[in-house]
Image (cartoon, rainbow, N blue to C red; front, side):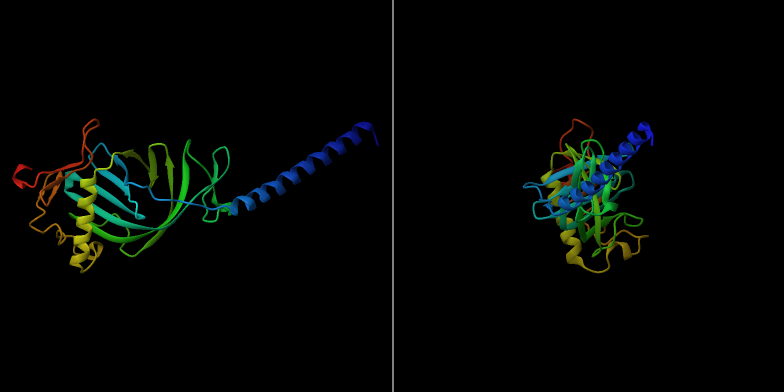
Length: 248
């Protein structure tokens, strides 16, 4: 055996040993990481994220301190609005390994759970249940039916969150807007009957036929309040209340 051959065999053996150690270390790291579970905690105050399209349609998500969340979709041009109340049954923060590599599986130890995170983003896996829905307008619901539970991953970064492949920017919470949505959802629950997705969508829902909720282009009026989508950048507020419908 020549000296060069001997050296080559030694190098090959060393590389093989290093690869083996690396693989074992990787699985040990996964196992150790999987033993640590960080529970997601709701905000102490309502936190709002929203996005608005060039055509005026908007999506808004409000996380509430009681482990619920309100999701609102609006299409002011077609007088269509829909609100959903979620119950966040549980939430766990993803496991960070190195660089932008995270594991988003529930226990953080599944090889199928590895994801490359968007720059600056951190994942959290949730299970949420549809508690209640309210809808105004024609067409079908954009959300799952009441009672359905869904497990999904939200991505959060400074000033934004990703929901349904859309980045929603953090914005100041409009408490009047939140109160209105909760009131509408409560009213829908009290009315009972078929959920919005099972009603005759060729007609307006029972809620939108309520005389206290007149419909007009680009906005919804309820209890003396005008509810609109996000205003132009720099403007304040997402609605207004003056208890005088004639001023709307």
